[in-house]
Amino acid sequence: MYIFPPSAENPSISSYGIINKPRNLILDGGFQVWDESRSMPIVALTGYTGATMWSYITNAANQYTISRQPGITTNARYSMRLQRDAGSTNVNGVYLLFDMETENSIPLAGKELTLSCTVRAGANMSNPIVLLRLLSGTGTDQSIRTGYTGQTNFGQVVPSVSTTPARIMVRGLVPANATQVGVQLVGGVLGTAGAADYWEIENIQLELGPAPSNFQVANFGDLRNKINRYYYKTFPYDTAPAQGAAVAGSLRIVQYVVAGAAQNGPCFLFPGGRMRVAPVATMFNPNAVNAQVRNATIGVDCTASLFGSISEVGANPLFTTAVGSAVNNINTVAFTLDARL
Image (cartoon, rainbow, N blue to C red; front, side):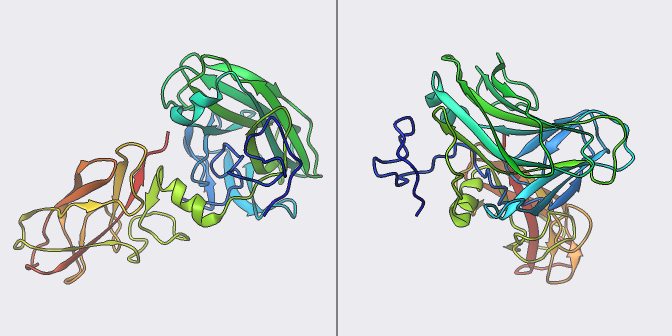
């Protein structure tokens, strides 16, 4: 149980200061869930960071690495490091982004929000400042990466940071017509990167009211289940999705047709429950570096593997069974489901 001073502005805190419900409007502000990678070079101009719910945009592809690090204070287990590659002369930063769904954003219209986080500069951070920005839009379920309709900056600060961790904040009034709210952060960049040209961030909290409160740590199991609405993988949690990377967790499909024939399904329900929208489903061969279903009984790949109709709750795999296979063979396939903004 966490105890905080009572807050009239924050309805999530009772008159006794006891938390009644989550205060943090950001899903995984503590960077607890990393499904795709724990350390990833930025090779594209936009994408996701490895911390599952956080995305980025930049004009500095192939110049940065994003990684999970230990907490920079004793109040956090993990932090995120955004590091410019040593020797790089590209002076574009990497914008760290979080988007809220429209359904979660509309109730915030006309209300005051406060964003707070803890930041530390690397020993060679070339321009030790960090921009914090609150953004809103008038569209539906859009992303800052592609731009909000009617995008508005309703709060911004650019404080200096140092190698000593510091809590920084910005607050702003959400426009009355807002249907979406998002957060944008970026570190300063100048000149040529040294060996420790990075900034680290932890415990990001967005909450109702004009002042920040203590960061509210999420229960990992609850957080994991909530994130399944946006992203799911069959791979073990500590395994990054890749072709040939994992048999554990793979879907097992009993073959009911002869060799070289088309098999449709059976249909299966997503283990994570209903997703935000029908997801982008990507197949992974558990044993080989291709995207084919694998016949585990005889160790041969199938062909023409893909997902058929996909909804928010389920899908059916389609494939042509392997040469030399037989009815009742076991076929396996790993996959990811992506319904993020």
